[in-house]
View 1: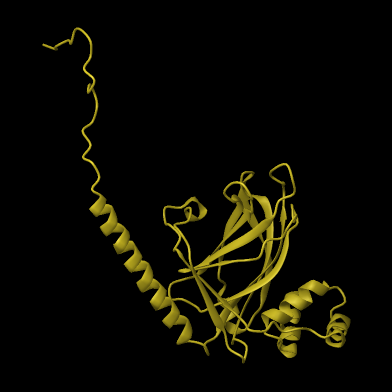
View 2: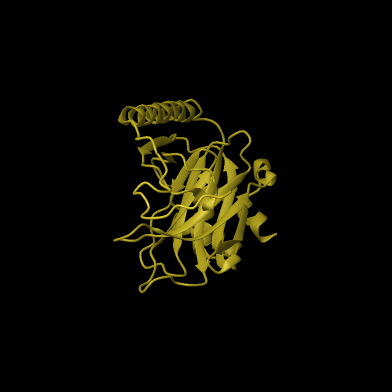
Length: 260
């Protein structure tokens, strides 16, 4: 027989008894998280400093063509990349709107088991969290490890649906770092939102290897290369030149591969 309760319900009716959280437990968890972050930071620094002469994967984020400008004003887009445990960001393109340009090259050491690059485009906001606009995952082609430079437009996913948020132009190459060597800038950040809406959280450690000096293409060399490739955009020539660390011969060979 079922029983029926008659009268006023008690204050604790259907209330779950939840044990209070011990502050010491929270403190131990935070200390453990800090220790793991410190260990990861030390490993990352040793990883970069011990491999200065190794070939690197060069990723050049050129520009994007987005289908919509979200918000009341023109967007200020920037790109965030994740390659294995390393996360990189471009500069923001103020008022870039639907056609932002970055021409930013990052260099990262190949990591075992890492065969793709996660790409996200954010709109930098002043009075709220930056808004995720578009994203995609790019497989790292094996051809680049054989000296082939690949330039391609990749479809972006976003609010408009899979592969319908626009495209992003990225150049991939592989080679030795500049002769002057690389320096590492490491910044500790608080826990970030989950990447690409996946279940895996971003690492709080950002490592940005950067060359001490960006190679420049002289006006004479630029004209000579443009005469060889009259249909090639000037900015693309400069970007490929920088991706090849200022080596003119490698730049010409890369451009030859792009037009094939």
